[in-house]
Amino acid sequence: MAGNAQQMDRYFQRIRNNPAKLTAFFIQMPKGGDLHHHYSGSVYAESYIKWVVERNYFINTKTLEVAEKAPNADPAWKSFSELIKCKQLDSIKYALLIEWSIKDYKSVKSECEEKVQRLEAKLSEVISVQKRFVNIEPIVTNAVAQLAVIDAIYYKSITYEKIESIGSIYPEKFTFEDLQHRTAKTSDLYSLLD
Image (tube, rainbow, N blue to C red; front, top):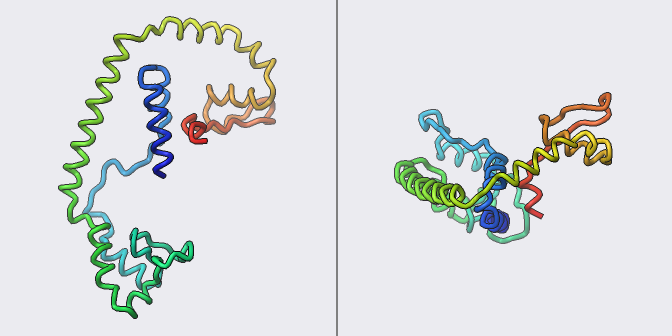
């Protein structure tokens, strides 16, 4: 996971002064996080802990990762029944409560808001620098020239290139050429994570 974050950061540093690539980067960034949450409707950490203990799941006592089965032979993975036998369950439950609980939500929210403000300030700085130095006329000229001959490009392309071209214009799973082909557009961000 850290490797992917580092790769993404390196890519971001390379494109930060290119408005077209930067815009594409942010548009294609995956969405779907829990951006607005009402904790009164949440399941309490205590309920999760009770559930995994009752099902005798496994926990990595170093990382507090919980799994239905131990994913490897690392001795840090223990079943909850083992923890009960060796009287370690209470200390693990306490650690999980600290890790999973919403008890410290206000302090975490405050920290996150500060980080978001710093990131927004950096983004504003990048955008203002880009506005001063970027001449988009050649980009637009090239795009218009490509659009003028798009039919010729399409007909000279192999099937994969056709699917890619159509996929860049139309939504995912768009069928064409009498239903012989279907677009499967994926985020360009994934191609950067080789």
